[in-house]
Image 1 (cartoon, rainbow, N blue to C red):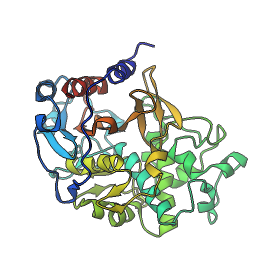
Image 2 (cartoon, one colour):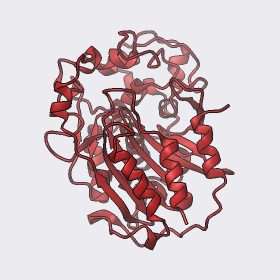
Image 3 (cartoon, rainbow, N blue to C red):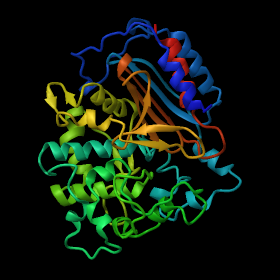
Length: 393
């Protein structure tokens, strides 16, 4: 299969450079130390070349690039775009991007791509991976017994529709791995009102919309990328802890990691938008990549239960990339990319160019923010990895 992602496999499977050990005593709670690529075993020339291509607009509207190795920032760049002007020059604004709700209107520059003039950037579906970590914290703190708990246990006081044995057997892990078995179609174009993600965001009660969907497969058997499944995780956190997901995340994860500024969207019923509503600055987004590198431990404190990162990064299913033939493994709300043997790099992936690549083998975290809703240009992961490969000494 000749696809770009298979090219990526080749790029990393044949890297034979030495590995720089990950520092074990650097904790960027109050800020990342800054170094040079060379001091951290990287060649700066390929990173500069990648920066030049992004700056030239080859990958569309890129807003931020941040490269970290061994716990040090080695490359950081912001790219300025006048989105008010860009929006005004857009000839036809697709209706599915221009919701009456300004929070979900992608052409409202108070909310997209930055939040109200701040440096907080929308993460879109990168939020899903962070939401999965909140579930891990709740499991570790015994608020949730395990990922094997049946989802309908949290709906005992509600009249759920389309209940059958399949829906009764749906577990939290089925939600985490996008194998809920619910009827959901997000592969069709966003301008088609049949798109489930569009229907979700246009509904008044997101949880009712999701849990009342009919079942189309046995839970745990068929992968279907489903933002609704992630929203059920938000509901489960509220039911099990008494706190909304953003409040729980702030208390038990953001504060220990030193994340002080964030914005997290709410649904019409004021539930935390776990599927795509979080905004962070790149340096704080990278802290979650570092948490993966450190097996869920932060400065001596175990944030995530032992084994959670391993479970999150275990290939549970295969994810078919929309509009491509490529199939890559999927963990807990996280895409994985094989780089040789049993090793993987981890991909936080979000709409319009939100990406974070975590490469444990080389101690690298690379974050990118963009807002590519205006045309065909997109940020290509294989291109990013080709330059990182060249940079590794």
